[in-house]
Length: 150
Image 1 (tube, rainbow, N blue to C red):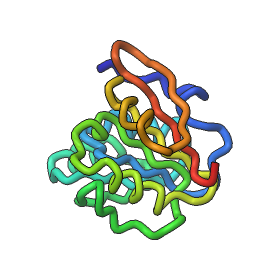
Image 2 (cartoon, one colour; image 1 turned 90 degrees about the vertical axis):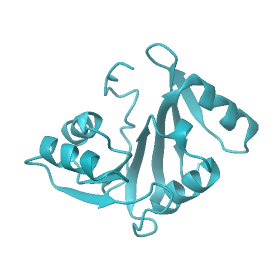
Image 3 (tube, helix red, strand yellow; image 1 turned 90 degrees about the horizontal axis):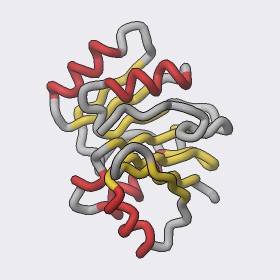
């Protein structure tokens, strides 16, 4: 999967105040792009210590918090975040509803959840009652956006 272009098409310009959460931060490449593009505090979450360490290394100089947690049990305060970003994890999570509930729980009103994953993930959203928008990116990648309170 190619790196995504962090343009206005991916990160909404009307984010409320608050930090950005990167669920499944992995090697930190996308996390660094988020930090550079938004100039916001970041909360980096992954269940692997190696991923947290790789991301910590890439975010030197940025205000960041690192959580070694499951993405379905975040331990982040309700209604506290502007954006939750999840790249290439949605298709790997067994209980997608819990992931979505947890992400929406921590978002502020008018905050966004952005899921970047394989095109097959669209089937879940098409069958759900969630209101979302999407666009196709490189290859078989899709970007799905949900807005809290929308």
